[in-house]
Image (cartoon, rainbow, N blue to C red; front, side, top):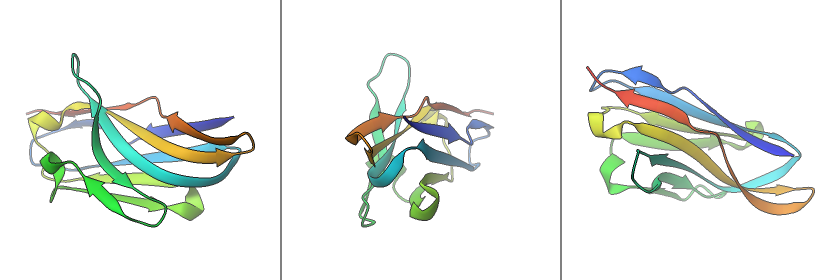
Length: 119
């Protein structure tokens, strides 16, 4: 059994910062690609940032220059540093990862963490 647990969401004023974390636990052998996605009501879930096991990174155009994704492979943890936050960044943020476990490789999602940017 593998779980992804996000933390770090909350309410922040425009221009502020938040740091999200996503920790994988359970029978994890190794983690391949990891990513952050976000979703608002009535819209499809969209990619925010993606990082491969070798460190190749992709960002959505809307967050380039403001968000930074990183990972700590020793801790099986993914991070998202969000700076210069805007109201349009308000969403539920989800962690996603391709994880090699005792049962093989599978794709996993966290439960999501709410980020609200408002004055």
